[in-house]
Length: 86
Image 1 (cartoon, rainbow, N blue to C red):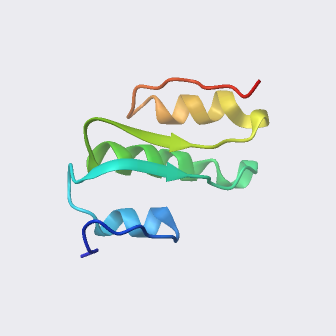
Image 2 (tube, rainbow, N blue to C red):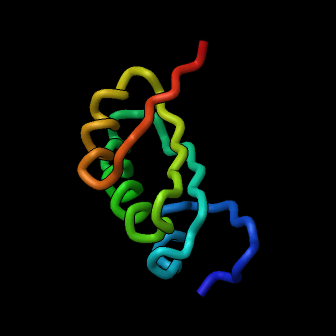
Image 3 (cartoon, rainbow, N blue to C red):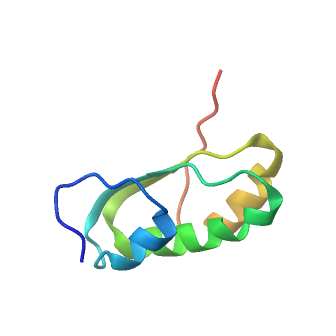
């Protein structure tokens, strides 16, 4: 079990498994951008849905090339807001 009120830096797919349901205020992550890692987005979205408190956010950075794939994977579990850099 991870300690409360502490910032962790590591593989979020591993760290998220240790967190209890509905216990997290914010997930910020930057998964690998290449096509071979698209499956990460499924796991990220599913785990974020499980651990995030109601109404809170998962902020994930993505390369532009696979945004349609990333969104398709994430919306299976989460609502989204797309923020684009100017």
